Every structure is written in C-alpha cells, then in structure tokens.
Image (cartoon, rainbow, N blue to C red; front, side):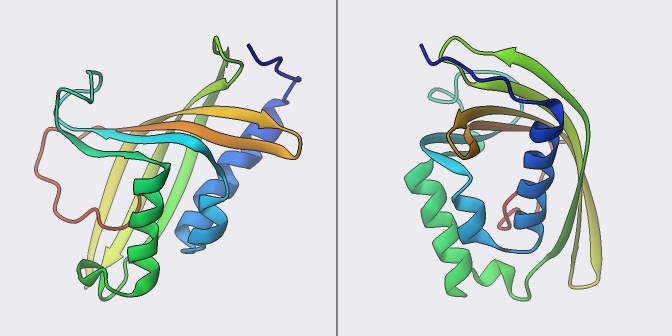
Length: 162
C-alpha cells in the first residue's frame, strides 16, 4: 500500500482545472503526461455503474488505447473532427473522497462541456470520478470515469475527448 502524502484541496482543484484546459486547448501530449501507465478512462453507456468487461461502454480505454485515440486526433486522420470541435469545460463541486486502498486519492466533481462544431452547439453535463496518484512531482490520473447524464440516449459525435 502506498503512503499518501497530504495533498491540499487547492492542489487537487488546480490539477483538475489544468487537465480540463489541456484537453480544451488540444494540448494532447501534455494531457497524456497527466496519466499513469496503468490508467483506465471509462465513459459508461446506458447505466452509471456496471462491469465494463461485460457491458458496452462509450469509452473504456487503457493507457495504450487512449494514446492511440490521441495519436489519431493529432494525425489529422480523425475525419469526424474535420473541422475540429471547439470545446470548453467547466469543473465544479469538487469533493475529495479520501484515499483508496492502494493510496490513490478519489475525487468526485461535476462538469459541463460545451462543444461548437459546424454551427451546432452542444452541451454535455456529467459527473467525473478521478483516482489521482500522488507522485514526487505532483499528481497523475490512475482512473477517470465520466458519467454523462445522457449516457442512455443517442450521442452523435464524441470523437473529441470528453
């Protein structure tokens, strides 16, 4: 079990804000550097909580699959993102739920994502759960789960990272 050094609420908030900004500004290499090598990124479909190995998910990526998704976005070969979406995220209601068994810090927050593409503006509302791993130079994302409130409805184009 890892020993968690105290991490301030301010440091956690700043980390989440930075993650959102990097994604909004398509700074994907820097965004990927926020993740641990064993990270999981999960966006459930239809239900908020289930075994993702036995049910379909909108996204269920390990680090390697997430990197492949990013590489495709960077390459310009993500045709569904031509033209590229303009996005902004707002993070709120940040709650530190404390250390997990392995020493990660579980953080729950709400977010709103606004997307503009081809004259159409779309708003997504969600809860996100991060498990942040304290390391020598800050925090890294070991797990991120995004629970869209419309995860049981048709979602048109999520080729940008939510």
